Length: 82
Image 1 (cartoon, rainbow, N blue to C red):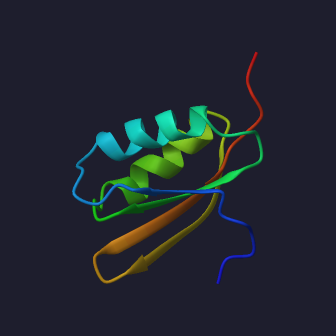
Image 2: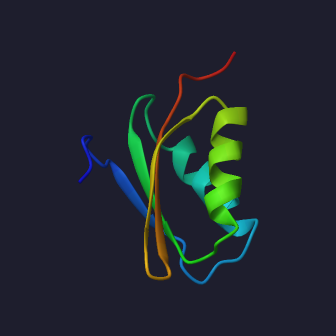
């Protein structure tokens, strides 16, 4: 069970790499620093790519949960970079 409030949920099922990362980046643009996004995907590559992308862009990986073919990735938006 999550220990944070989910501010936005992005259903990225059916999208292949790199679209889950691209759509996550676009969704985060409209969110405030510190807010949490839940990305729901069925693309196994996203388990590796989204956490790496999050770290490279100053966002925080909170959790990766996998149930059958559904993967939920939780990210906290980092502070705006100057």
